[in-house]
Image (cartoon, rainbow, N blue to C red; front, top):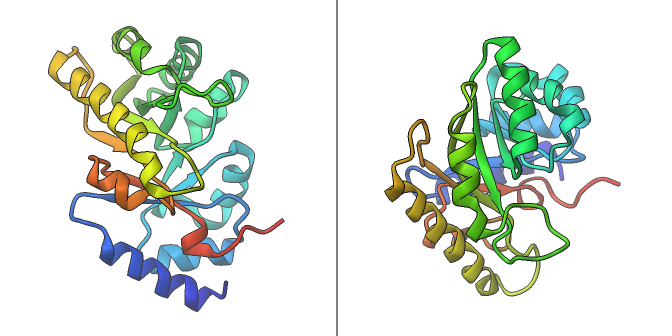
Amino acid sequence: MRTTQIKETVKTCLSSLPPGVDLVAAAKTRTPEEINAAVEAGVRIIGYNYLQEAERMFTHVGSSVQWHMIGHLQSNKAKRAARLFDMIETIDSLKIAFEVNRHCADMNKIMPVLIEINSGEESNKTGVLPDKVDDLVREIGTFSHIRVQGLMTMGPRFGDPGEARPYFRATKAAFDRLYEANIPDVEMRFMSMGMRNSYEIAIEEGANIVRIGTYLFGERHK
């Protein structure tokens, strides 16, 4: 997709989002020219699945935008992730949270995080199961250098968008439960749900962060 078309698509997408809903531009495989076109059109949050790719792109784009980790984070990369990202949306274990907290403490940085929910309880997906999230959030809430600020879920990537609704509702139910629990040092602010084929459904179910890539940029580069 040409940069002029990216700019037009980004502006259309942003104008379609309700107030209070943030767009994360999922930028996997995109070129610096494509990312900068999206930023020029109004994108303020860039999301990456892979740390190494985000590090390379940061040299071209810089800190004029926020950087979100939206892919699975390995514990041996927690230090680099803590240095680069402004939010990690995919915390799904105490081990990962501990490593991020440890490295953020060394940097005197507090990292906002979302807890990734495996809302479909699928064995091939990462994320904590909905009935396990409360205990995980309570434990992470005791850490001094990360702050739980909400939940994230993937939902199905393809198929009928309506089929994603139960996934989003399960995540919203967990979010509401945690909000009502009023856990110390936990601020339930964000639900990151929905991609290109499902973000409108996700917003109906309470999402205030949506992650969109192919719609903005066209088909991925090989």
